[in-house]
Amino acid sequence: MSEITEKENGERCRFTIQFVLSFHIIQIKLTFAPEIL
Image (tube, rainbow, N blue to C red):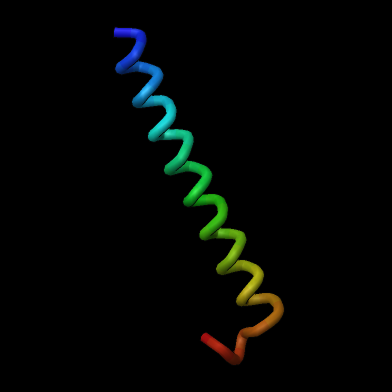
């Protein structure tokens, strides 16, 4: 069971990282290049 838990935690962590990176990328675009959107 510990392996499944570690896998789920890894996937959740990766999803969180992707979400944070996407949010920062959108924020950077809005800040530096609003005319592109």
